[in-house]
Image (cartoon, rainbow, N blue to C red; front, side, top):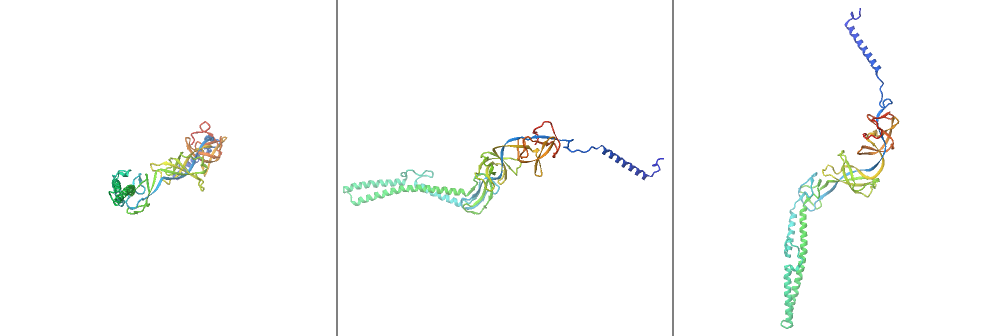
Length: 424
């Protein structure tokens, strides 16, 4: 008779649990017996797929790297040219102003009084000369009324003196009468000479008084301080009610529609920087954008402390996004050409401060440390220039996926050997 017919319920549950555990163990053992040993990509049985890049020399035209700062095209401290009390301040810090726009107004009343006084003097002198307000000074003084009157008196005295001489010879008049005629002639002749001299004096006075009038008008106009060029207000130093002396500073104006990029260029490039070339400029505020300027000035002297010389580039800034004081990095084209080696960015591995590549050696790769000279970007994409570690003809391996390691077994992916333009 089977044993479970007479067994208790607890015994039956224990038996079932034991059978289930036994089944799990059997299945686990069977599964382990069917598993394959794990493998590593890059070993002899599983070579890593790679692309190959054959190293070759290229002729590269050098670009000069320099750093510097942006400066305003112009920066001026505006001062008062006349004395007076500040009546209005029309602009403040940060305001954009146009050329000729009023910035500060002084009280103009005293200056207006001086203009009126000078105009009165000019009118008086013109009246003495007998000319209108817009007439030029007379070129012939004999056309002046006072001179004509003196000339007429002189002619009359001259005629009377001649007749008196004839009558004295005929003994018709006395010596005293002749002397009186001669004295009157000498007096009228002196009066005529004085009249001519007075015309010259009045002409000189007219020139002087008209200059004084123009100076007074200029001072009246200078009571309004205006922007000499379009720009922005950097600082403001005055307030309404203040009394300004001549040359008192009122504002600092900067012109930013164009900027100066002053660049420190290493002295070894002194023979390769030329005026008028277009430079590429980058600022941290807009890292994805390239701005352009033209070399306008080159300092002929080398700074002894930094062993650099200054090159200045002008660049447009009509939208005002660039600010004076920005740090700028520049790339300047030159005529210098050299043989060099470039690698696509994807062929260079960087880790812990070390740049390295993997060179093909038979059917496996060997790790090689390199020293890059910099990065460039052209129609082939972003590439590294290699200064040391490679020579023409070396074959660099680039993993299709994952990473390579020193000694990894590789095989070419795709089919055609040689350069792989798709690698970046």
